[in-house]
Image 1 (cartoon, rainbow over the protein chains, first blue to last red):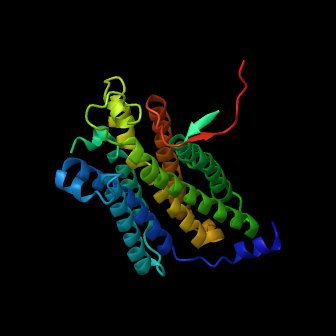
Image 2: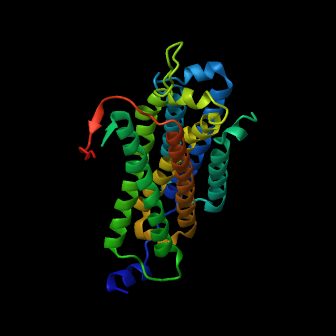
Image 3: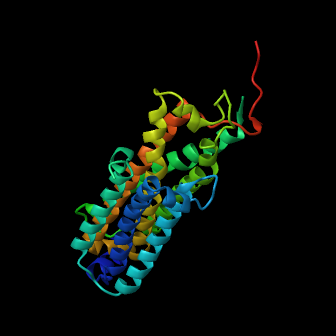
Length: 115
Length: 190
């Protein structure tokens, strides 16, 4: 172990986990919102029409743009609130993983078509 | 030997960005595990840390380039609507797949899933890159942050794998072709 590494490990300046927690929860939310927008655009003709931001790509352009904008907004808001704090990461991770898995499953057409 | 412009862009999207991202995912998982999840008390060197940061940022760039070229360059060609009465659907891959019950599933399940699930990869890897950029060697002190980063990289690998598989199979059944022809090399004739 180098002197520099040994020194850093012996006296670590532990950063609060809030900034990381904000990124994790926002990413989970983003994937879930992506699936929700995809289902809404698939089930409602009005929403499908609203989601056509660029005609050649069709509703996919609006679905993904909306999900990305909301993901980044959620990330910015959570980051501003949590960046200097330590939060209960067990709960944040559980929520983020649940949203992530739901997002993954809800994009699968046979499951999405159940709604 | 030649290929069409649309085929070239499909190659850039699938092999250039998508396949490279999949390869990079396995490397990132091994590297993250080796650095932070082993019982070693040693912190990674600053040089190693810088390499991981650049690696993850490059992966995020690859993932975004893959989904953006897919959605905004190739997908419009894929979903193009043929004029009424068109008999040859070769230039309209979505309609070609849907014209037969033996291939319609490649669109109704394959493309419908691929076009959405693919976006999970850039979102997940951007988060992983951001956390590693922000925390660096301090991640050694945050086991739950490390666990979350690993889970999201795994999920991004699965999302990219699903997209890659369906992309390859769809392009096999109904290739995106058309546009100017690019001559690569002159072959020999016998």
